[in-house]
Length: 101
Image (cartoon, rainbow, N blue to C red):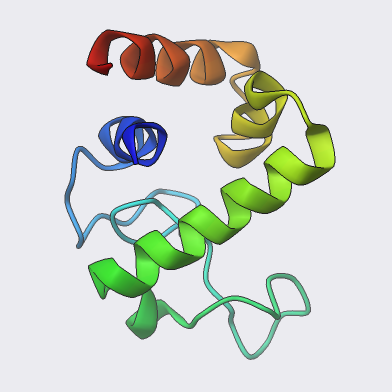
């Protein structure tokens, strides 16, 4: 829960209506399924992601998959966050996590 809360802090500061410039939605900034795309076919729709419960469940699912795939938490968080910022995002989330324990 503390790791999820740390990601929420960095992604949206807890705003369930947040929308990023890349189209990520909600409290955990999850990219939605769009019917005209093949990417993210297994994700909830935009409207579903505005529900905080759905958004957190989906964000936690994505993070869990990343942890299982990358094993290392830092790499899992790196691949959860913005694609163009490198490890600074992961390190910032980990710092927030460590300060929240």
